[in-house]
Image 1 (tube, one colour):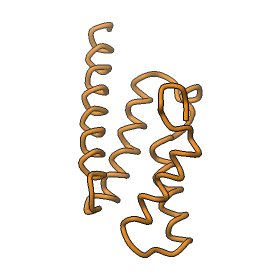
Image 2: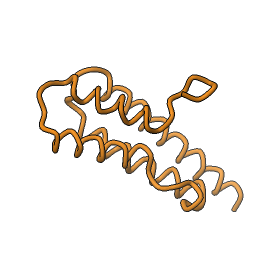
Image 3: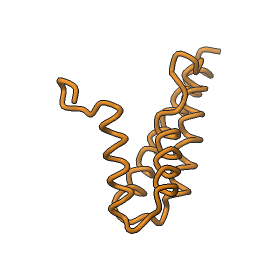
Length: 104
């Protein structure tokens, strides 16, 4: 754990795995697939490689939309959290596009 009490990446992945296991019986292959899929979409590509803010927001929105679609009926709060994050990403993207228009 970091000094600010946030999880280091390996701890976050373990917690994700435990959350998936808590939803019910699942094979190891299914668990590995779910963890890999979710982590790949949440973490996404490195920000150093992403480019302009509009491009970053677009990619984030695509990843969050895909995740939300996959976990829409999931028990617990995951679907609501993903809907919230998706809405925020849409707002950020709209703000950057408005800024781009205002700058010419």
